[in-house]
Amino acid sequence: MNFDPFQEGEFEDSELGRIPKGWRVVELGEFFPVITGKKNANVSSEIGKYPFFSCSQDVAWTDDYSFEGNAILVAGNGDFNVKWYKGKFEAYQRTYVLIPYNERLTGLLFAAIKFSLDKITSGHRGSVIKFITKGSIENFKIAMPSKVEDFEIVSTFETLNNKIEFNNNQIRTLTDIRDSLLPKLMSGEILVPIEEL
Image 1: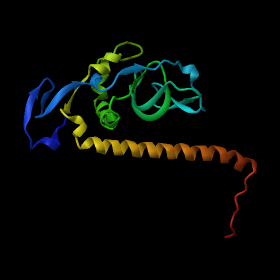
Image 2: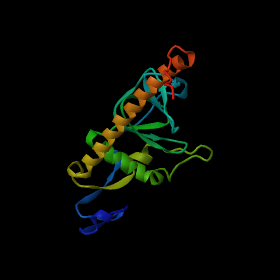
Image 3: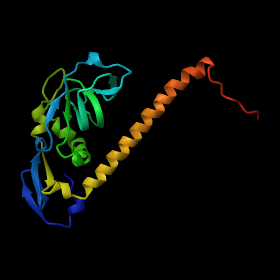
Image 4: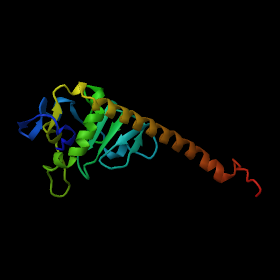
């Protein structure tokens, strides 16, 4: 891990190497339950009310949801990507849904998992299709401040996640507007005035 911002402080030994004094080694499972999505790919489509998260980088849609919250989604096979979403959603059976007990820590945990994803998935199984188990996530160890809720950067990550959520909502709204106006424009139902040069 990179502790450059803490170089002026005291360090102590841990099972992960030297960490800042006052920090501790924790397993990710301490912060959230690791839940597996239950749906197969047949429930996904290009349209729907709720996002459907699978192991793909792309997000599909569906009309039902099983989850609601501020969630981190880890692809359990394929390219092992990680996503963040807040709201109602559905998840594929090989996608792991992590909804932190303390919602304020979601941004920090998302960044920690994204940063450590190669290490989390390094013990993957399978020769043809590589996959990870719930334990790969639950038992993965990271260093965190002992009172992580009081750590200043938690608010910074929370602000960043809120900005991401706002931008994603704007993108969805603009996409919906485009999708409703474009057919009308192409059919001539809406005319665009062309000013003379």
